[in-house]
Image (cartoon, rainbow, N blue to C red; front, top):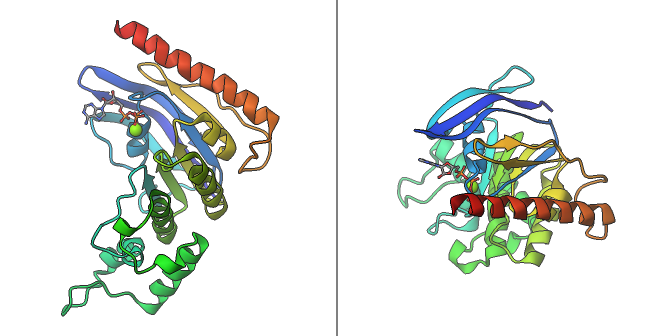
Length: 260
Ligand SMILES: Nc1ncnc2c1ncn2[C@@H]1O[C@H](COP(=O)(O)OP(=O)(O)OP(=O)(O)O)[C@@H](O)[C@H]1O
Ligand SMILES: [Mg+2]
């Protein structure tokens, strides 16, 4: 598995410099988690890595194996982005169908090859949604919809997964369950997870960074001890969570004070 190296990345919107000369290595096969206040530049960094930058950007994103990141990225966002007129199965195979242009000319419904269908059903089984394969998104709970989004990410089968607050809208228990599931199913992928939740970052991250300031800078990495997903009973985790929460709270307090 290859490292992804972000070298001297800068982003500005007119006079507003979001970040400058930012360097970050996503270690191959590991989860890197990124925390930071609202508007600090987390999503912008993700977009820059994915080759979808807005604004003026400089810098380089390279894979350690010398190949480009193009076609090696899957994206999972806070909104599940499911298409309401497609069933669960049709939604998670959307990428395959778009790329192969598989549509029944008569009914205009998507056509799935037996191979893609088998693969999709096996992934739905892993996320516990076999029964919902033919259900429309509107008939699913928020947690089920996010499991569909995770299944769609897995269907893409890319080595690099960029996740922008994927569990942000879920209740605490559903969130913990989905963290465990994502951790299990995305093992050995290179993952960059953005979250506002220090506990989530500490449970899942091999390295946890904090993006702060303007222009934003990355703090040194925290490397929580133990295997992921880390248990809530882990005392080290709880003490690190306290420290991170303090840091994030002071940061938002400082920002408010500056704005006054
Ligand atoms: N298209 C744009 N035009 C101008 N400014 C933008 C644009 N997109 C983002 N910005 C600005 O860039 C900064 C970083 O935005 P970004 O979306 O990366 O923040 P974020 O850290 O992801 O915040 P949040 O936690 O709220 O999602 C913000 O100040 C935002 O206003
Ligand atoms: Mg964002």
